[in-house]
Amino acid sequence: MERRIYSENIVSPTGLIRGEVVLQGENILAVEARNAPSTSALDWGADWLVPGLVDIHTDNLEKHYQPRPGALWDAYGAALAHDGQCASAGITTVLDSLSLHGRKEGLDRKEALGPMIAGMDRAQADGALRAEHLLHLRCEVTNPELLSLLEPHADNARLKLLSVMDHTPGQRQTSDVARLVSRLVTAGHSETEIADITAERHEGRAPELAYANRRSVVAFAREYGVPICAHDDATDAHVDEAHQDGCVIAEFPVTLSAALRSRSYGMAICMGGPNFVRGSSHSGNLSARECAQHGVLDILASDYVPLSMLRSAFMLIDDFAWAPERALATVAATPARSLGLNDRGQIAAGQRADLLRVARRTAGWPVPAEVWRQGIRVA
Image 1 (cartoon, helix red, strand yellow):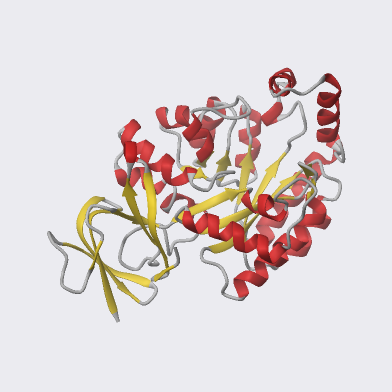
Image 2: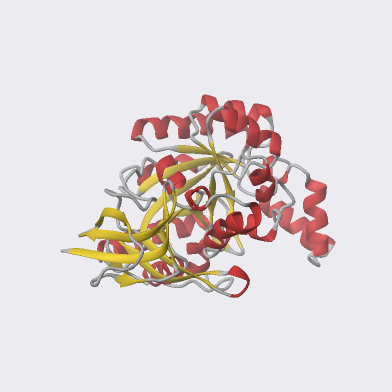
């Protein structure tokens, strides 16, 4: 059965259209230009009709698995809470990005990894989730246990992305240790606390294994056909290695020169939505807005604030004068295509009916008013 949704502002791949999106089952049948809604159409008026968002990197699940330091929630319940927050932000496809190393705010990521994946697997199999949840495994190359953590998930059908990273103090994201210490001082930490924090960040690392582990992850990605992205590249040498490894995405490059070189190799540049909204990186590295100004911003991920994606896209329209179709592509079509998900991310015939109704509020704030996934309203 056909259903129709009218909007004065449909963001199609070629620009804004006033008209109707025709749905048939889970997919978009057609997009028709019209000056007024047909009798049977849902009328969204001036509210925008845009693609459901595709988020390739979010740490948000961890917040719900451990809502307070030392207080663990059950994994199924954490999956539901995280999913609800993503869906209400307009995200219809989300890659839960789980780290294969270390501790964060007391959470032992090694111990949490299996339960979080299993909880999400069960919730998705039960049809309990509103968004579609896929899996992004973040491979810390200095971890001696990396391969033993990665290999058990090789056959998980949700695994759609791997990233290679090194968060050792003095490397990449925190190459300037003095700046890290300065940030910790500003945050009110004592000398003793700063020593403990930096010691914890070195804990469990074997830098001498970084090269071999990276080679193993790249081989794993090729064997199982999983796309791979570089993370926190800072230098030409980092980017050259990422290109040789077949990375398709440069995730959170920490210098403009690294972003520009990654683009020269054809990698999609992914930055964090919170970085863009705030105007700067929380760690003092490359600003997502600077990437936009230099034409090297392809993908925006939620990172740690789900609602940041939609707000960033509309800031690109309002503050950077990007065409709507270009701005929305950073949070929908481009991340989808970078993962080989060619069935979603655009308001076009043949695409999944993953739709988002956006109302503009005070100061242009984009508010998700309705969220549809595969032709069904989920939020």
